[in-house]
Length: 132
Image (cartoon, rainbow, N blue to C red; front, top):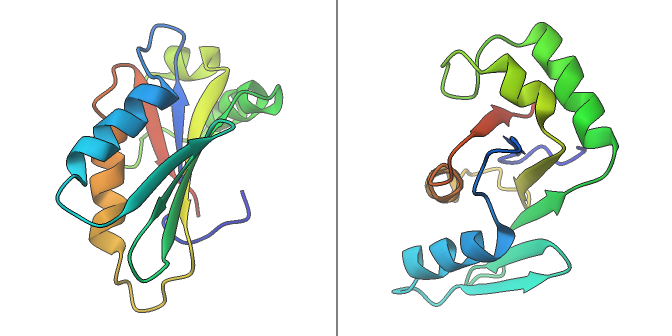
């Protein structure tokens, strides 16, 4: 993934209850007190803040997702939280949420990036890595 601002890959194991529509509901609920616009189009959620800053969450289901999961299982021992990852669940993952934001050099949206990952973590059997 070429996007470097707040970039995460959340691998979804086959036993996970993760769903892009449910994730949008989680985000709608979390941001209900704000003026943010949250849309879901073609497997992608876009969160637009009032100053036009955007976060994106794409549900990737392409064949390369599993290949990358297999490669990651070979060299990464811990997830983004420095917790040992379940390599067997990772190896079985054939889809993932790809999360990233627009450029944010002043890190104004750092906390929001963490709030979004918190919503992703509500699903079971999700393995999240921060993209470097």
